[in-house]
Image (cartoon, rainbow, N blue to C red; front, side, top):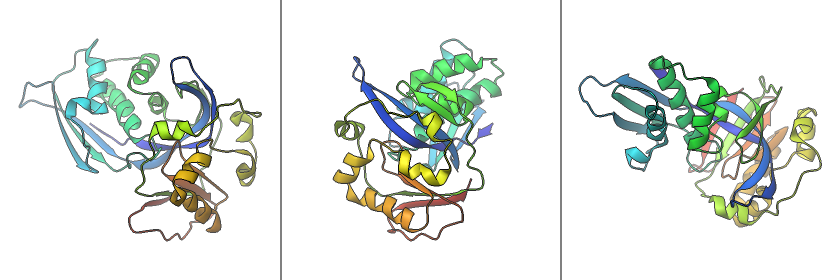
Length: 271
């Protein structure tokens, strides 16, 4: 069976407070985008190992047992019988981009195994399993626009439809670590909820919707800030860094023509 894990973007990201456990509460809107990978599983009749894993596209530089797809499989196997499977992941979503590629792989793996072997796992249980994999994994179980709070694991559906807009996504070969991103943020509650702000005309978003990580990330990595500026110069109605970076996206009414550094990842698509 084959599925196509997709990326997400963050529309607004407010770091609200630091928690006693060291994590941070935040608020953001997750929106799925059609930048996809390919994940395939087949029953392994040739080998009695619980799984075999292979990878193409962007190299997954980790031991198979540390891959989030295998972690998802092992979570299911704790309570359900799953035969030996061959797993292949063709990776196309850049790492360290704030696009949730790894989280999507884990969540889609849960859904894929559940469907392929007709395990009958409820949506609620899948959400709980996904939460064990990572803070934003649960979003990809339903994979629909959602207002996220907590550490990104408390989800509320939102009525947001960006179809018809074109998205341009640019990622430089820059790594922004999560500790670095959070170190430059002073947590505080936002004056207006993103649930209300996304109801504004999209052209007004740039005046009201922000990503708290941008100020310090742009200071430390000015090349990321320049991408946002260039997207606006190219005619974006709204542009923002996604998550803690390092990708930046712009939303356009018409398909843009954007030139970037040859080492940068660039993806343009109509939503």
